[in-house]
Amino acid sequence: MTRSLRLLLALCLFAGLALTSAACTKEPPPTVSVLGPWTGDEAESFETVLEQFTGKYGIEVDYQGTTSLRETLLAQMQAGSPPDIAVLNSLGELTEYAHKGVLVPLPENVRERSPEPWAPELTIRGRKNTYWTPIKVDLKSVVWHYPGRPAQRGNWCIGMGSGATTGWPGSDWIEDILLQKSGPAVYEQWATGELAWGSKEVREAWKTWGRLIGSRADAALRSDFEGNDGKGLLKRTGDGCGREHQGSFVRRLYGKDVAYAPTTEAVAELDNNRGAYEVAGDMAAMFRDTGGARSLITFLTGDEARATWARAVPESNRPFFPVSVGSYGDAWANRAVNETLTGAERLCADASDVMPAGVRGAFYRAVLEFLAAPEDAELLTGLLRQLDDETARHRELGTPRVPSVCAAPPGGGQ
Image: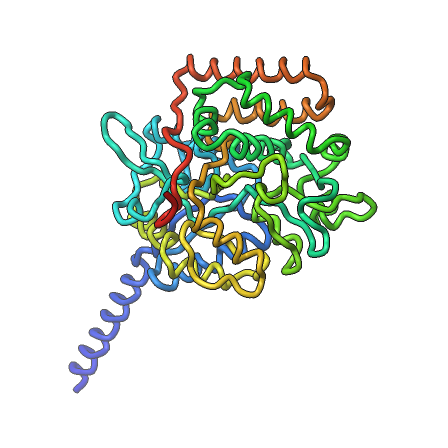
């Protein structure tokens, strides 16, 4: 009995050591690193989606949100440690990364659900592939106002401030004006560098913007795009402005009572029946080819993730997607924006997002200089010449261009 007891104790001890060793050598769950533009409450809602992904697949996600996305990504790449996935809104930068061989082509199932104009197909080294996919989109041909304040009348609420990208709200204005006055074909030629900044169509877009904003130019230079208090330009007291040209994302500052009107209905000079709208998007691209990255990018473009994301935020901040995921609740503006996105004849990507980074930055700076004297024809001529020079410089450098900018919406259009 003594020998049997000793043998039993030895076996138990051996088993315990084996289990302990197995526990110590067990590999930790895989982790996917994601770099994106969302911070604060926007990051919290996105992380709700990531938590669902982790619960379903057992893959952890390390999300880093920053308002200095381009600079952070470049620093990580220079250090040799890019994220597995980065979420960018600049199609121009993404195109350069793809041609440099930095991006991984999308998995086939993700490629099939990555529509234009957000995710154009690129031909690189003789092969066609799609390298990024929209996970959230926005409509930019929008004018916001409060009920009882007609969108067709009233001073414009304008603010140019936006940190390192100050000036982009003005570029949105000029882009939308050009699209509505000259049509998608001209807009695409300009966005892709085939139509000069000094052309009569582009010049007229700048001049039209100057006429529309009139005396509001000084206020635009003194204000941030969200208002200096971060509560929205429409809420600014003592200013007298009553309508705002801004992307669909800005409604999160206002709540359910904000009203929506397409630019063509709100601005008499831009009235047309083309059914063309400017859009933007947050595109996910893989910088590392890992199983975790493939699983996550597949998940983020699926209905389950989109529905979770939509439920995780207040109705006024509900994200829009390339395809509808159902009811947009009680906020009429939400439903109207969604119907516009899915029922348009042509959607055209934000032109400055399509341009090379150097041209885009020069565009923003030119907007600010123009606002100092919108009526000065000589100033405008000089600014457009500088932009043509910058465009030519990138052409000489061989900076790759996005091949297409406008397309029919997924499952619709003409």
